[in-house]
Picture 1 (cartoon, helix red, strand yellow):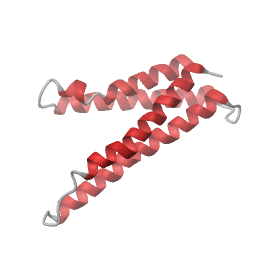
Picture 2 (tube, rainbow, N blue to C red):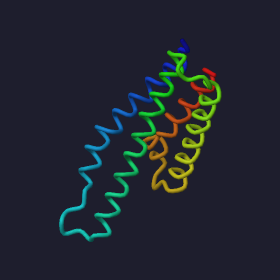
Picture 3 (tube, one colour):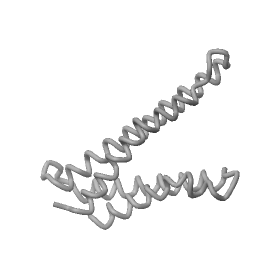
Length: 129
């Protein structure tokens, strides 16, 4: 059993639950009202779909990491782990860059700190390879 990958799997699955359920509840509060323009409604819906795309990424990443950490079902463990490591690292870089470039105050870098989660995931996976 690979403890570091198991920790990464648990974090990914916890993040999925928070993202899919708590985050969606918060996101639904931003829904435009019936008098809003159709473009506003379409943009909100598209962003909500993108939100849940991330939820799916977190769920599937967690499942794959759990399988790699605890079973022999997946044979290419190091290759798939490396791909997930790179994926989370790139997500962290992109998230940080967008927040840094778009921030309206310095506090946003930490408040919108999902990049920290991505780098933590990348590091745990790398260390577990």
